[in-house]
Image (tube, rainbow, N blue to C red; front, top):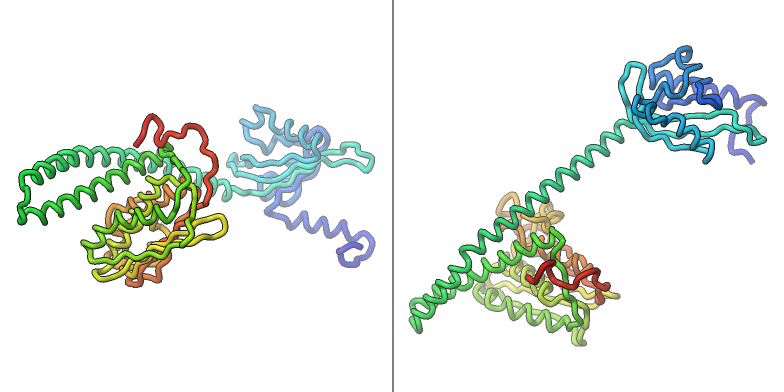
Length: 390
């Protein structure tokens, strides 16, 4: 049963004629079998600028660009429509005044009930706006790629610049420690020097690993390990920093050993950054929690603190490289903004995800890492870094 309203016989013709007169934004035209225009409706007049008298009798190539005419695109489009029934038309077209616009449409082969080719129907509309959006996106991608290359180059230079003074600092600290012997007045300053050197070393490692990750040279060496053992190791590594900051570290871990595929060194980097981040942004006397549990096919690790929290506008970009808060109230925006970006990179290499939740400044934060229990087989070399180790 037809969905059209009941009308007297012959109503289809007037309705169709009215539609063709009123469809100003859609260029509709008909050609004969040779591609010569035989009908040119209102939308075509409006879009191309030719009157019906000027267009009818002209080849369809009239509306194509010089380049397309030279490559015989009008003829090819008709042949394709004849063979396949229709041909998509997404290209530049040209108006009577020589101006161009990007059109999207279709060319249809029109056949008699017996299958004889009668001609072609073409319908298109101006979508220069869509083309402009596409070109803008392409330009943005190119600009992003250039910025990424510049950023990677900066990371490499910064890493090397940090490495140059770090080795002499380590050597000098070792010499001072030996000369100081059991000197009590120098014990505290040496502890401070050692902590700052360790912090610089972690920053250097993060910088170099971020640069390797961006260049595709950072690879994992996963092996079957116990998650609880890895988390206990991470807590032990963060203990001295937590003690110096007056922060208590506590954990809630599953009693049954949770075995999974992990790159131990990279996982330790993830946990070190998350725990150090929580310690850094907690007040003296606070507690930082490390929790883990099992979900279907995944292990979930959470690092929770009750410290500075994270402003809502900062949360969507907290894992972006060099993310900085607009002011001190934004919480985790301080520092170079490398640690959490590296966390995201390393978790992604494990085919996992990392997310943050905070109710805002002063209300703490919770970082959640989800990792699959099994890693897919590695592709290509198993080397951690192409051309050598880290």
